[in-house]
Image 1 (cartoon, rainbow, N blue to C red):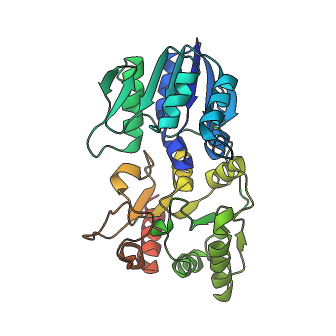
Image 2: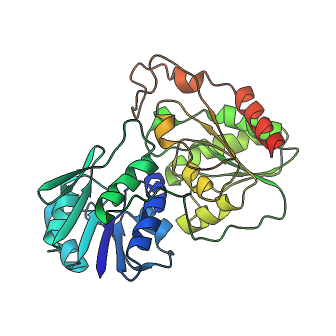
Image 3: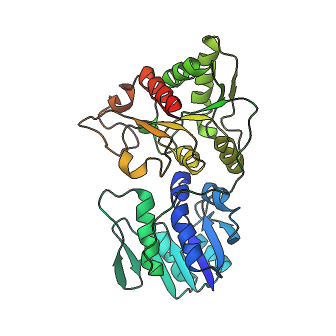
Length: 325
């Protein structure tokens, strides 16, 4: 049996899909698996021992996208079963054009299988649970989602290491402030070496944190923003002793390795996208009338959901977490 899987586009969503994927693979133990998706998603999951083929979706990179989708479908070819963790029109088109007879498309409230609809979601459920409901509708099983799972080996650091992750690719509304990250890092620097993470678009905010930490007299800090591959990112985060982060893809990577984590939440629904099954996780957030707004940028221009969170709150949360371990 041949199964085609289109992964979620965002890194964090792809990591949150891993419990459902593990159960899918268990339901079809002899299947040949092909994954297709964004560069970041496929990079994170490509080392899984059950995955036979990896195809990167480059249909957005230029030209007429429907034609690019057609070409991608011919590269993928026909499978016995095809499913997509995305609900976009182009995902439906891609699966249709492969000629695969059994096709499933994820929706937040249901999944479509040709002309039939199967209920798949629970109100206010965690995203991991939604993905599992989707897969259960395909397999006919009642599997429960286990922990997040990544197969890149965790790095072994010589000294206790704190990771700082200020970025949030989704939008500026999810970002806490560099000076506050720097204050937390400086407060914890007597116990940890400090590693600053970030993507290529987050070099400036990472540099601001590095500079502010140095100005506080801390020397054991290294800025690697924009310098890591996805496999390196997974391995480095997996070896951390503490992670301070916003709601982001790296936050979910940390959960996959059970890294002690303090996550700063503002405009997003923490019950739906918090770390899954990480017993060493603390959320710092404020209850506001305007939150969660789920916007990429603050619609009322105050950014109070993040601005109001003080560095001392995050430092105290980190200390409580460390003391409880």
